[in-house]
Image (cartoon, rainbow, N blue to C red):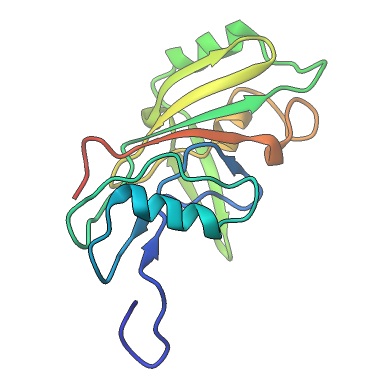
Length: 173
């Protein structure tokens, strides 16, 4: 638990999901007050989680790790009649720079997202993307879809985007 007047459990979610997106392989850092075997912790936590949410694995890390993901994988189901073509994907990948505009409150910021797209593939029914995470940021899957010429509600539905993997491998604390 944290210290202070209103103690809270020590839990953090590196690169938490955006509202409305689903995750198939999320990561949580949990601080414990005493040592527990990973299998015992997994069983205890699983017993407390709501139906449909499970614990796939538990790993021991150093106290107070500063885990930041290095890569995020997403799957974006396409709607029937979508306009995405293989050529659109190849043209995107051939570009050296792709600028998007991010709005937050009264601020509009231009962000170059091509640098974050490590892999991009369309199989006709969905788009799979692998995005790099750096200290300077990452791309959002809906920004990549927009840069491909796809529109939410016409070509895909933002709330159906799934994050399929979070990789912490090379930047773990």
